[in-house]
Length: 342
Image (tube, rainbow, N blue to C red; front, side):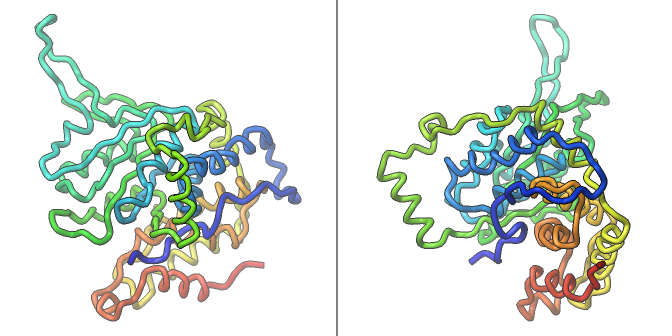
């Protein structure tokens, strides 16, 4: 069994009129198009609200997502549906133990026609990169993504080449198979904005999935699902700009800092949240508030986004692991221990 899914405990919040927190001018049509993304994705994917919401939030924050789930819970279909709903390019890479860094970033090859070395782009040159089972390749190849994820560029043979905008890495890993796998280094985990766990579906959801397939549902034909583009790259860029201007008042900023600092003092954690994690929590809280129709963040937004933003940035102590302690329960206790600003 997988742990309870960290992150937003439901679908993208519907827009609701709210008093302005700072007079931020937000385009309502742009926000509506981003809110429709989740509904469009659900034409292909049944359930998995937390994972769908995490992808929409990551898009708004220009971040990356780590998806964790056993095979067969629609991880690939989820990413393909997102690409279709946003009308962007997507590539999938199946990570294997023999994969080399150049297989991802690209490499220089000899061109017989020009008698010169030319650069052949790797699959990283896309908008959505599905890094399937990223923990099945050695750390050297995993680290090939670090520059791409952080700098939005790839450097090969001393030359830096920019990646398309938007660029989002969605990496998957299987939580129950450990033979032939390599643990992701902390430096790489910290580059993922969010971690979303895709659990096995409830009975009613699984029945719905089988009913769809009994009716001729084909996971390879997105058009037959009725899935269409409801947003595009220009609208995404406008939404990202709006999110960056969502008001974060000083008491809420201090609350985020206090939550992250409390993880560093927890006796159950050997590694707490870094300042980069605190910045990530600020960004995801802004995106959640934006989707909820507000131009300011509240402590509740922080509490909502804390599990999926922070769970992969902390590490349990050996004693806590032996006792069966879950990261999610430690984070919940930490949130409960920090006074909420009024």
